Image 1 (cartoon, rainbow, N blue to C red):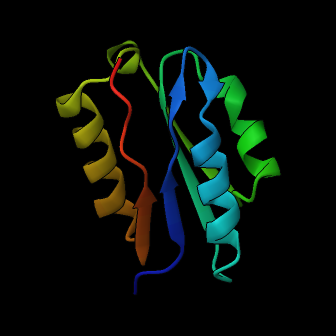
Image 2 (cartoon, rainbow, N blue to C red; image 1 turned 90 degrees about the vertical axis):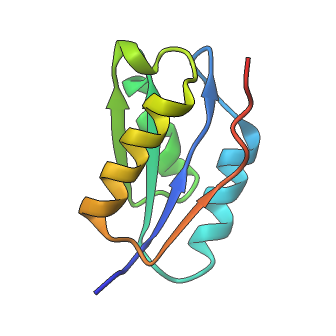
Length: 98
């Protein structure tokens, strides 16, 4: 049975986007477990910050292929994670292209 809200967070050059943090805070208000998805290269250190904004869990996808935004790479990672995790909702902003 699907459960929990997943928020796909956005970062650029190792800094979390404000809108992603706002989305985590809003997801927290919905009363379900909140999982943040963090994609990029060299981003593992940002995971703790996501917890401060409402994430109960953080799924980190840290790989060289995710260093620069690519629709194909990001879509594959996100779709595979959603299929495996089966959240009740997925929230995201538009991803800002470089």
